[in-house]
Length: 69
Image (cartoon, rainbow, N blue to C red):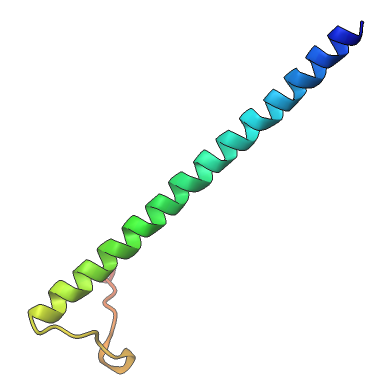
């Protein structure tokens, strides 16, 4: 009976570790995606600056309503 309890405890521990591994893999994927997005934004901004483009100020921006006829 003691062996069965030990095996059950080991299975519970393995299950918890599997869940933790899955959670960490999901977090890692999300962080990788965030890093990729950040790097892409920086590259785009650097390329735009090389072409002489600069970010527009809030006063220089406006919006068009494309639903109006």
